[in-house]
Every structure is written in structure tokens, then in C-alpha cells.
Amino acid sequence: MTDRKIHGAALGAAPAAPTAVTPPEDDLSLQVTRRPRPGRWLAVLAAALFAVWLAYTVIVNPNLHWDIVAKYQFDGVILKGLGVTVQLTLVSMALGIVIGVLVAVMQLSDSPVLRLTAGAYTWFFRGTPLLVQLIFWFNLALLFPVISISVPFDGPKLVSWQSNQVITGFVAALLGLSINEGAYMAEIVRAGIQSVDPGQREAGASIGMSNRQILSRIILPQAMRVIIPPFGNQFISMLKTTSLVSVIAGADLMTVSQHLYLANFEVVALLLVASLWYLVLTTLASIGQHAVERRYSPGAAPPLRRRILTDLVPGRDRQEAAA
Image (cartoon, rainbow, N blue to C red; front, side, top):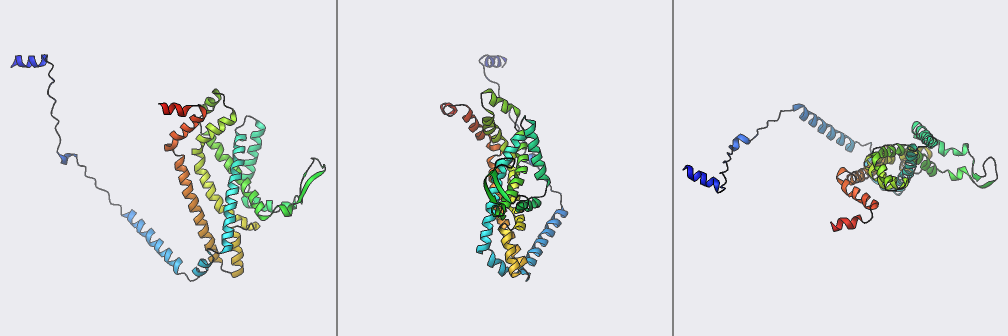
């Protein structure tokens, strides 16, 4: 017996593996008992009852005049005002982004004059109410009756216009909304730029890139993850803020709704028409915001970095294809 064991070990026979002992299935099962939470179910029941009661009260209320709501929901005047609201929002946001990026770059500049100018701009337009700014731009003719391009210090005038003809309600709304939005976008863009590691700028400078190339190809693409969420909130807020244009007769959705209910005295019905359209616009904007946020989410980082490196390193696509 001993000789056979020694002979087997000399031939390199592997020792027998120990047999795994599987515990019974009952020993591995985990019995979880949830603690009863009657308070949560009572809160859900109370919220459901309140929602049903509110919907019933709104639907059967005879003072709402749902027939008037249905009549004006797709009325041509309302749709025209809706188009002005969308136009004001898109143009104001586009101008606000351009102004915001320029002011943010000025705030991060090494020049104290540029930093002071950018800081004064954001301080003033964020510190004064938007409604006051809109009324000021609409009444600009009281301060400058004539808008002209001339030689400085009372020199000859080259071109001139009457302010009342140039500063219409739409133009005043566009000036007020875009300049005010630029101050907020400047802070959003500045925060996004500062969230990028300073080593990224140093890496771009080490391969001979200019400041403009570093900003456009390296800094801003990475800062978009921080910029996109507050930008989406600002866009949705702008859709609703355009209703302030009604104080200067900007021909937007709220303005035309006011004109209609001042004529037929259906105040609540026309306000409900405008509210439904605002809900539609903000819902569509929220869907778009979520889609853009997913595009710039952390899961989308590898394609983004790969595109940036492709711009920086010539022939990178061919190298990756060969690999």
C-alpha cells in the first residue's frame, strides 16, 4: 500500500480534488419581511383623492367655458402669437449664448480691464428686474429720440433713424431678453469652463495650439456636461419669461390672449388657452433637454474624447483602424 502511494506520487499523479459540499438550498434563501408603512399608503390615497377632486372640479365648473377654450385653442391669432413666442425664445437664447460665451471668456481673461467690464455687465443686468429692463428698452426714445451713426464728440452724422420707428415692441423685447439672458449664460459658461482640469489647457498649449483652438476644441466640449443642464433650465424659463413682453405689446402669446379677453371678457378661458400652449412648449423643451443631457452624459465620454483626439492627432483614425 505504501509503495503504491509513493509510486503514484513519483509518476506525478494529481491528488484527488476535495469534494465541494453544497449546502442545502433552504440555507441560502433569504427571507425579507417588509416593514408595514401605513403612513405612505395614506399619503398616496390622500394625493389620489385630491387629484380626482381637483380634476372633477375643473372639468364640471361652468365658469371655465370649455367651449371657448376649444374655440380659441387653434385660433389663427393665438397661433400667430405662439409663433412670436417661439421666435423670441430661440433668437434671445441664441444671442444670449453668444454674449454669455464672450463675457465668460472676458471674466477668465488675464486683463483686469476685461474682467472688470464683464463683472460690471453681469452685476447690473442680473441685479435689475427684467420687467424694468423691458420697459426701459421700449421707452428708449425718451432718452435717445434719434439713433445715429456719427463721428464721436458731436461730429457729423452719417446715418440716423427715429427711435420710435426702430424700437418696436418686438425689438425692445428681443433686446431686453437677450441682454438679460447673456448675463446669466455668462455665469453658466464660466462655471463650465472652470470645471475643466487646467492640465487640459496646458496639454493643448504643449502641442502648439492657440488659445482659440484650446477653447473651441478642448475646453468647451468638456465643459458642455456642466453647461447643458442649467442651459436647458434657462431655455425653459425663457419660454415662460416671454410672457412679460405683454407689458410692452410684444405681440407674443400672452399679448394676443390679453387682447382677446379684453374684447370678449373671457379672461379665464383665454388664460387657460395660453397656459395649455405654454405647457406644450415646456414639455417639448424638457424632452429635448433630457436627450441632450444623455448625449453629454458620462457614458458618452469615450466618443467625445475620441473625437477631440482625432482633431488633435492627425491620422489617428487610420491608426485605430490598423489596430
